[in-house]
Amino acid sequence: MLIYPSVESLLYYAQSHLLLDDLDVVWARNLILDELKLTDYVQYEVDYEAIESLDRPDTVLAPLVNYAVDNGIITEDKREYFGGKLMNIVCKRPGEIADIFDEQHRKNPVKAFDWLYDYGVKSDYVKLTKIGENIKWEAKGTRGKLEITINTCRPEKNNKDTEAALKATKSGYPACTICKENEGYAHGSQIRQTLRTVPLELGGEEWFWQFSPYAYFNQHGIAVNSEHVPMKVDDSTIVKLFDFIDFMPGYFIGCNAALPRIGGSVLTHDHFQGGAKLMPMHKAGALVKLKNKEYPYIDMCIVDWYNSVLRLACSNREKLIEFAQKVNNAWQDYSDESVGVIAKTSEQHNAVTPIVRKADDKYVIDIILRNNRTTDEYPDGIFHAHPEYHNIKSESIGLIEAMGLFVLPGRLARQTAEIEKYLTKEEKYSEAKLAPDMLCHKNMIERLVKAVGSSKISPVEAKLNIKDEINRVCEEILVNTAVFKPDEQGKAAFLKFLATLDIAEK
Ligand SMILES: [Zn+2]
Image (cartoon, rainbow, N blue to C red; front, side, top):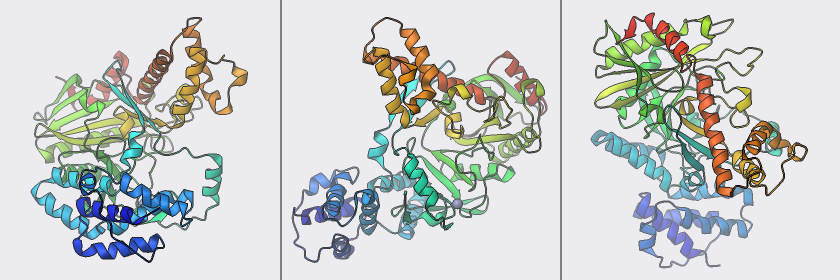
């Protein structure tokens, strides 16, 4: 197979989309040839217009990676690694990217982030095609829509992978998967040759922004502390979130609670999550309008949402920060045993998840109240997904899910297809025949099979039944995480807490 036109296509793609300088083309071509173990070259014409219209590099990159596999240059498992290596040759370097971003940011922050994101997609760092394979739908919900995604992007790790990962010697470099040292790093599953970050200054500290390669929503990314220091949510965190919003008013930005079971997956490294998306919770209105005499200009309400959210909005940044800090500090120590909230035992249990954005020229901060206490009955947390829902989701409910965007494990794609067969009666259900990894769904399957009864349903109906069940579970999980339940008793308890801050019903 003639590989030269493919090399030429990638080079022209990079000139069109990745700002590859004309003066760098010969150099880049020779580096690519070296990777392909070629020493000769003949220049071919390629379909320039088609290449100009591409929105991602898949079609220009794949032939080169295939060539490398077919010719024994790489093994099958090194496809992503090799693809990243080639793209890195034709991409701008981190410093150049930061300079271009900075120049654009001075004129228009939103456009600068759009550009950076587009560069991430065009350089194959953001895996748009993979992300597109996720299964997504909307659930109506009783208090506003939920968005549900079955995340098929990343293949599930099997036992063999886990074992291999355990055996692999950990050098401690990079210290974690979001450290600055990952820029350009490529080892194991951490393929980051084309990662490009831009610097941020938050609360007087050096931070940086990077997009997520397997985004859950549009322009999903993280703001990361340049130092590998643990997560925390204190007065300075609130300031940093506002600093970010001043830097990028088009995004929301939120910080996970800094405690296990109610935070995100990375607690060892201080970071925020954000992006260009109005989350389901953001669309929820007021359940109870509130006021505080000392801060009459701050709009406040309990949000009509599944878990416990206090919303504050104001155009005065300093006053809003000050009040949000008071709420955070008050919650740290607040207990109400009548609803099971105990701030601390031998360890801290109360924490908040603050999320900041701008709307109608006002700053808006949503403060989700969380608690991570466990009991014998709920060893994973009283305010965590209860055990009967772990077949759908057992990982901790971080801020993205708390705001109503559920990311469910990829295994569900396969498992729900299996359950479908029982409902359409393509296969007869029997507990004894359940595969080991289907056992967790036993109760759910039996409930669904019973509901269908002897009637015959189509695969489409079966799918809908399963989705309805997943929708219901996601809603229940959110209610599980509510420290004040969305009922009358919960509302009264919520108001009792707010009274300690001199907040009363309007
Ligand atoms: Zn780190």
